[in-house]
Every structure is written in C-alpha cells, then in structure tokens.
Length: 88
Image (cartoon, rainbow, N blue to C red; front, side, top):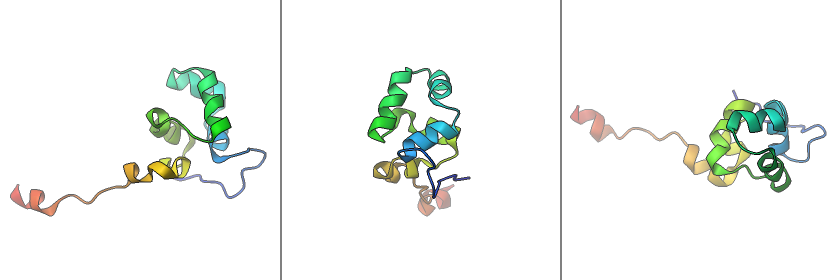
C-alpha cells in the first residue's frame, strides 16, 4: 500500500508528511533507535538517510522510491534470471 499524498496538508515536504503519518518525530526516533535531531534534519533537507529509508517507508506506508526518487533503482523488483531457474 502506497499512501503517497496528493495534498501534503500543512507539511512542507513528503519527508515531513511521512514522519507525521508514521507517528511523529519522537515515535520514529524511538522506533529506529536514532536521535530526534536526525529526524528533524531529514525533514529540513527533505532527504531520509539511506540507512533508515526502508524502515521509514514501512512505518509510513509510503514507498521508498517516493521518499527518495534518487535511490529508486535500489528498490525496483528485478526479474529472476531464467537461466538460473532452468538449471535447477
């Protein structure tokens, strides 16, 4: 389920929206075991650190490629190599 918004409400960017949907900065920081200042830095820069991207995506329901389009290639499902499947 991808909850990517068409209207961010009173949020400045999609990162702030994702943190809000995930339960707020305090909840996300506790869940990820990182400092709340990290969360506020992500919001200010509209850029979630790659290390925590998948977890924030899971918490918020927003696909990681929507949160960080520059890293979209890392989250594309690849087709299995048929040659490997045929060898089994």
